Image 1 (tube, one colour):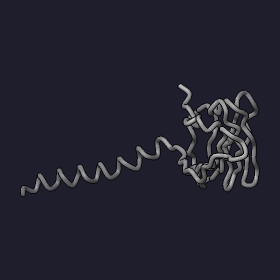
Image 2: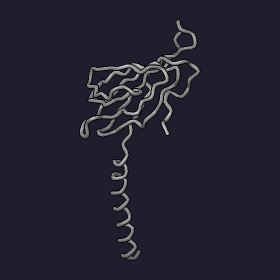
Image 3: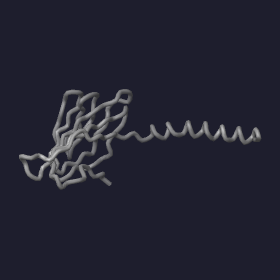
Image 4: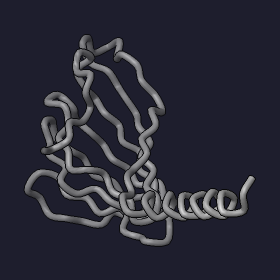
Length: 139
């Protein structure tokens, strides 16, 4: 193998390994994990869905709307999360604080306030069982 081929291949490998992390930090999003889901036997047609939303430092959820039937209770497990629902006030909620979102809510802001520490949110949905999309991105 020629030395120029080895140098070129090594240079490309180094450039690619450096480019990946830079690109990943340009756009930071939340990570959503389903924690629980069940039909509510005493309320026909309704389901309870619980999601954990993890935010890396500086991460945010894309602006979105919620299902027309979704009543949501949000509880901050750790960190501090800035949130705005519909045309309401933009607020920062810290660990142990909570808020609710009415059905058909618009959620233009939901982000981790810290650039150095992660944050975690628990979102509890009471929703029509037929509603499959919990959120829809705002275009």
